[in-house]
Image 1: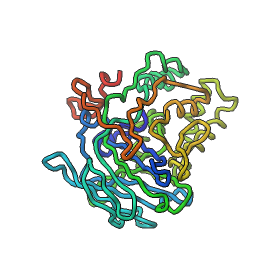
Image 2: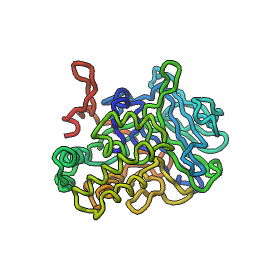
Image 3: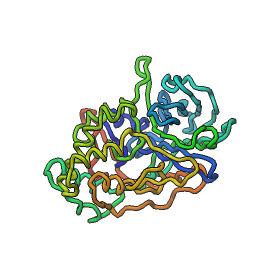
Image 4: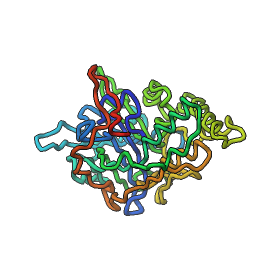
Length: 360
């Protein structure tokens, strides 16, 4: 999985669980599109709405110092009788990027409608088909072999390929901006979802580079919550050695690196700090060779596994082609979910756990 259900904290409420971040050029090449997919399995494991007391943010570093210089902040109102929510978009600059909703108001509107921004650009938020595609069941088998049995078994991929995310929906936030508003030819972006607790804004989830959490923190889920609370600026210092050790372990079991430790360090340096770099006005592509944003059709599952294992791995799952080429780009939501089991369920003790029937 990309970052679907990536930590105990985010699984408590899918509305603040960020599953994916995309950054690419808009239909107008002089614009940049930022998409935050949240609420994985919307309508099944969780509601189809956004959390009213949450703050969703696109954080942007414009000078490559791993500290955000801009923050586009989105908040939602309570769900109305028709199922809609009001939207408020703000822009924060400099020190105010870390201080909640202190940014300048740019636009207001409602979900499922295009919201025009007076200074340029547009915003949309609502229900959409999950753009992620991968064989999650095969990944679970692969990780069982790696971390429990100490075996490298890439053959599990492609044996009986199944997109476990097909037919499922997410809640999407799509922000399209004129490039001149970003004031730099190159940006680094990450997404954040936070809620207020006892008067303080507490981050529940963050995401940018795909598959970091499911691959590296699956061995200890407490690491996943700690990772979400930390900041990209501290990633190499706080998480670099852990990621390097996991990548080295995988390469050693696979026999794909003469120096597994050196390979692990290269992987950590490639994946951290956890921000998506994008050159404005260029074609986005997330690949083994290099990263330039992330398009909706990029096969990040194959790319990330191949990078970490230091050998090509493919799950034989491809994008279904349902995304739109114009704003808001995300595909229309699936409406035929009758009989589809939710990914998450609560047991008799009220604990959230995975529903094996949904991912098997």
